Amino acid sequence: METGKEQKASLKHLHIAPRKVQSVANLIKGLSVNEAEAQLLTNPRRPAAALLGLLRSAAANAKNNQQLNAERLFVKEVRVDKGPILKRYMPRAMGRANLIQKKSSHVILVLAESEKVKPPRFKITKPERIKKHVAEKMKRQRKVEQKEKTREEEVKEPRQTKGPGFIRKIFRRKTV
Image (cartoon, rainbow, N blue to C red; front, side, top):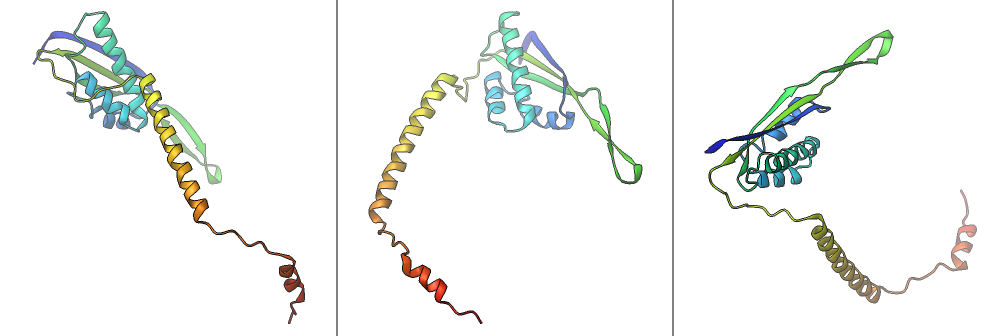
């Protein structure tokens, strides 16, 4: 399926536990670079941002350094290894201490060039277009809200204010 050219990229000392990174990394295995990028952009988990940066870096290196076709690239392998563990202690009751392990991970991403060009299933738009789209959407939303407010104001009856008679009633009360 792939030719002999590959591009490796690594991310060392990522301060997220390998188990958490592995769960997000499994989502992009075997996907084209475009699809993997879309998958990571929509994923809300914290390792997704780090993996997205690594994927973009590997794709840019493959395109510029090895002159690989960007449309043909796919994620051949994602390997997540344990990194160094920082050991810290939390003081507890009666002079005891609990061990806290701050785990880190090393991620190795391998991109390869496939023989066929897959048509992209997703279209990633640039941030300028997204900003314009969001601004237009917000304008439309504001117009709808203003129309709803005017309708509500027309429907509402005028409020009756409490006059001095209310205060008199409070002071006329008899306590038991």
